[in-house]
Length: 463
Image 1: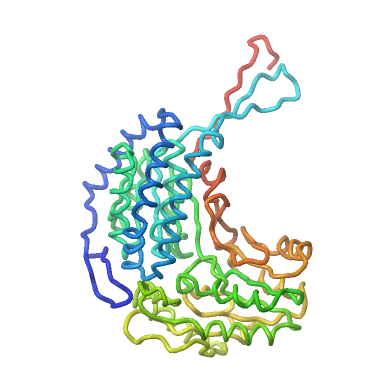
Image 2: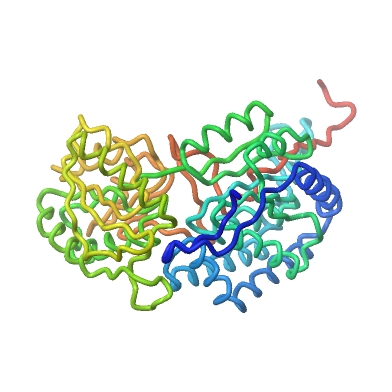
């Protein structure tokens, strides 16, 4: 069975679930389309009631949802609780702002004889959401909250190791009062992706996943002439300039690299440090990583969780070995981790010069790449020497200087003096091999919308 809950802390298989049948997928499509035909004309106020209700349930049952996330993908219980709250905040954001974000826009015209053009924003149909395991709730909510608020329907194909988290969304949205059919979790098999995207009732697909998965899904969507948004991998630069508060920057680097056990697309994967402060920063960083405690993710004293699965840990270990074969220098920098479970020993990787292809890889786990930069221009060069373009951070005592460096980094997002972290009221997305399209705020709610021009023109106006 492809869908299985396996506790990464114990490697115990907790539950298994069968793949959806073709008939179940077709039934879900029919129910979603029928529900959409009514939901598209439902008022924003009534949609907002459902979003607020879902948020209230998440806040009320925060421990229940957080335990489920920790059980299935291993993240720290406190991190799981923060994720549940962030998910509630996203529901609340769209409950408050969807109507304003999608209100008709009166377009200016040079000559009144050209008419009275208005741009209206209308829902398109069913959106397929294909979501990953590293944020079991947030990744789903940042699609369903805007799309349901816009009047669309959503079918979910969640990661195969999160079947219980996926099922929890069915229960959540039903309890929140969402009409049946508008959202459904499907334990879809691989062939079902093409089946769904080739259905004329489906308007597009939102994928968060690996670069490889994005290539496949974007190809299927493109062949079906369906809109796609892709939030793919990242190898974010964490730049420390020579005027930065080195102690605080080092502490943030430890957090920015190791939250969620380093399994975050916007994790601080590449530390790029100015030569003048490099040695001081490196000593502080190693000290901070050495203080991390690996153990039971439900234990509040644990600060380093296992990876999401034993397969993920094994794959990361193989990737590190291949990087070493190419000349990378690898150093153990953390305390020993438990042998039981999907734990991974924190590592520091250097000697990633222009001849080592590993500098372009994404290491999804507690493996830190570090680079020494001669000056600002060199730091920018190293940051941009990547096939990815998701996010990044710049640490400096001069905000104007930080802004200049941030503007020069070719990514979709940059934070100054803080690791990049998702918020309910900030956009999310990248460029290059990190994908295309944006999620959250007004950009996200308009991705699967028909931006229709309606122009009232005098019947006697010139052509």
